[in-house]
Amino acid sequence: MIDKKAARFGLVLAGCSLGAAQDVLPPLTVLAKKFDSEKKETTSALDILSADELERMQRDRLLDGLNFFPGVRGLSTAGQTGNLGTVIMRGLSTKYVQVVVDGVRLTDATNGSNSFLGSGQLGNITQLEVLRGPQSVLYGSGAAGGVIGYETFLASDREGAAVIAEAGSFGVFRSSFTNRGQVGDLSYSVNGGLFETKNDPSGAVLRHDFNQLFGSLALQWQAREDLQLRLSYRGSQNELETLSDFGFGASPAKIDTDVNLIALNAEYEVNPWWSSKLTLGYYDESYHGDFNGFQVMTDYGRYTANWASSIEVSDSLELVSGLEYARTDYRNLNGREVDYGTLGAYLNGFWKPIDVLLLESGLRYEDYDSFDNDVAWNLGAAYEIESTGTRLRARLAEGYRTPTLLESEAFVPGFGVTQRANVNLKPEDIFGFEVGVEQDFSGHLAELSYFQQHLENAIVRGPTTAGSYANINRNGTSKVSGLELALSGQLSNESVRYRLSATKQFQEEILDVPDFLLSADLGYDAESWSVGAGFAYNEGATYGFNPSDDHLVARVYGEMKINEAITLYGRVENLFDEDYLVFDDGFSPVKGLGRSFVIGARAEW
Image: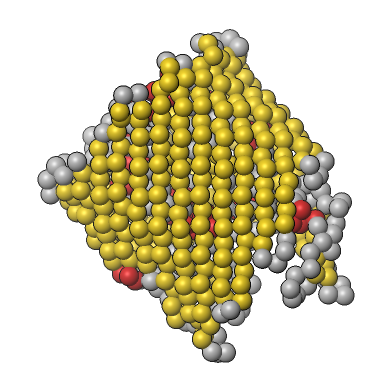
């Protein structure tokens, strides 16, 4: 609603500024209902990391930010900045996780989020949100593991500009410019920058250079008291050049990837109890790789239209409903062309029969012009013990990932194994169950969740016969389960901040994910300077054919305010120069980045 939207920007201004302001109120979420709401208005596991916290910890890449959330692991199995990214959420791989930016879904079963994750920058955003567990009722196919989302920052009553520049080990250089302000009823923000690194090549990789130009723009017009229009753009141009020698001579490669997102949002308060939001979006991703003369090229475009409504039927009942349409166009250099559409409708209800009890249930129907249809549902409950402030919640949900024509149609590549058609390929079904407890006390928040996820009809590559294969649905059910812990808060009159997230996997029949994940950060903020330290620990993972190394990577960072306009900062990554293996396919093992130093300056006015 418009009133909630105004409240959201007030919270953002209070807790997330061009400099290093303090959080004073809990942030609002936009993922949980598609409309601004409080975190406790959902029965799902939801965590939020503010832009202020990301800036304080000097985290500007999407993959790095995701590792502060329980149940989530962000990485590149190539081990270097600029390569394809991967996210594992509750034991499910990237193709089961949706990415939503400015209300627009970027991915579907045809195009994963690997390129976006590998190059994603977190500059000029409000906050980073992660909604865990099957979320197909609100978000459709591919949201079986969860949803990652953020919005481009737009302050309606704050003007200011900032410039940063930093340099460090492995040829790292990053600079950006940000300007935000308001002219009459029009609010705006603009951000642009350059990032480059020569990375830390080792072994057979002799050169690994990455260069990126990135930018974002947001315009918001309060056309009337009850109508708000918003236009945003985010995009980047990415270039990765490598030189490798595996004993057969030097082999160069150059990969160019361009991503562009345009989103138009119109939010209309029909009356005090009905808010409506229309989101139109276009996302384009083009990939061109030249591997020592061998060309690989793909072009992906996705058009979306999403109309959502929030209706307060009574003081205790709210209905969130919507219609969505998407059109996907995919083509590559090998002659594959895919064009298909999806139409979905959903209804999700939030009922509070008493003040301390929230009940949630929802249903979604989705129809595809290349397949039949699918249905998702969820049931949840949350109860708050008023005397202690303890919140108990439980949730059941079923999500799905539909196959695509890329998986079901026949394809004859220029060389290699031929893919036979399988018109009987069925969608993958994911059933999720979770229970959790949350305790909020005096500026501290503790969350503990147990989850189980069951995957049926998993789409896998069938046996190869006579030089060809077909994708098939695997029989049986694959399971994954685990325990998630999150702690965060402030100490000593808000001068000390801490965050900790831990994940213990019990069953991992779908992927060999880490048995145990732990990340922590502790920071101290004085009036004119601040310092912090953190670490990430990974144990028991296998991303290739051989196990990855268990490892603990530590970092330290700090900044000093010279005057009202100038701040100097620096950090050390992999403080103890931990030498560890990330990925091993038995042929070209990949190690993690070595120790690096970065220094920088920020000017604000």
